[in-house]
Amino acid sequence: AQKITQTQPGMFVQEKEAVTLDCTYDTSDPSYGLFWYKQPSSGEMIFLIYQGSYDQQNATEGRYSLNFQKARKSANLVISASQLGDSAMYFCAMGLFNNAGNMLTFGGGTRLMVKP
Amino acid sequence: NAGVTQTPKFRILKIGQSMTLQCAQDMNHNYMYWYRQDPGMGLKLIYYSVGAGITDKGEVPNGYNVSRSTTEDFPLRLELAAPSQTSVYFCASSLGSNIQYFGAGTRLSVL
Image (spheres, each protein chain N blue to C red):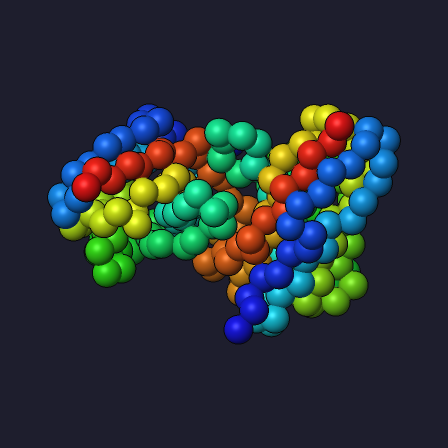
């Protein structure tokens, strides 16, 4: 069975600083994808970034980058130059590509609070 | 540019009542999903569909039913609502095994 672990229930970061949100995963399947979603207080789920298990380079999307360490089974999200609007819940998720549905398994989330 | 649309946004049910949560997407995605999110938790998959006429159970399917008669629509049916079904329900869609895009959610309370 797949498992996603986010060990930081809550984090503070100063505005304009960088922050790393931790995510470790467990799967025996060699083909999978790792996703990060942002959930602001309004409740919607916003896709941020994706990393495939066979991708050689770490994914980047604007101020978001994914620090993918396959041997350690970690997929940490790095947010550079934090903004007040980054305050939200962040969820790491994993999907397997060996089935028909690409069902996502989510971690418990990390609440990020950006201080002015 | 609607994406994934869920209705209603909020609903209060009495124990034993039934209801259908509606989900529609206009992105021509073949895969659709229903998740639930309990307070302070991550999302858990209820049901998913890889195309019209094809559905399958996820991690927490008990107490729910789905159907997929068209590519666009994927309604979730709650029969005999129970307090344990109080949650926020999210519908999502994707083009194959790709990024899932979520609707705004339906907040359901069963009292």
